[in-house]
Image 1 (spheres, rainbow, N blue to C red):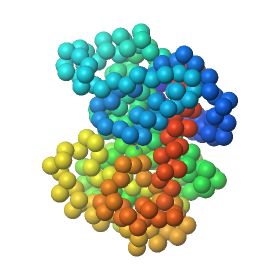
Image 2 (tube, helix red, strand yellow):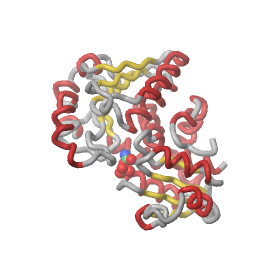
Image 3 (cartoon, rainbow, N blue to C red):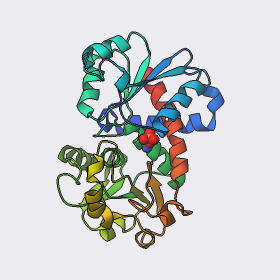
Length: 307
Ligand code: CP
């Protein structure tokens, strides 16, 4: 794994390796305090971030390395004065690895094709593999396994986190049920559906896409939702999207139909939109353990790509 651009770069075996490493790193942080000694990570952001930015910075500092943060709006590339190819080639002369958050997934792919150091996708409009690995670590910790569990997702199906969960969870033999509105703008992308179905067949998992939240939540072990207004969605669409997604809100009434399920959200969350305060602040919500696990999973990712 030279780069981590999407779940397509990860075999089920590699996912298990990252989760095993992350579990050990979390239990024994002292053992890894020099694991990235003298290594420099560049983090590039086109969109805002709390968790991804700070967990990558902390991961490098805690493992004896360092990180530099760069906003694309301050780069010649960001203002149209330099090609993405020249930018990637230049950056590769200064740092040991790059984490990049850009709206356009294809730009990240082009960046990686021209970089001679490992590149990690820190979220694009297509996928969010770092979130997926932190989430799998959290589910494994809380439920003791991944194989055979059911994850039910509610809301925006055409969403980076949804795509990552579909591809990553089916690779681990999980059953994934997506409840989302009908329509090209709201349903998962066809290539993601195909990838997830292919893996589900191999691993005895499954993928269901439905417009019926009550069907999706049956026997769920994990209930998951994400923002209805991803970073790349224009603010002008807020009113329309609230109306369209409202039937998929995770409410107490819906959550009660899966009494053994835990609630997850990649954050940031808007209470009263994709989830009610009663659910996200309930005893069955594990959102802050989930946020913490971004740190441990990312340390494992950093060490894997540096090797
Ligand atoms: N979940 C996530 O990636 O959070 P940030 O946007 O704050 O990094």
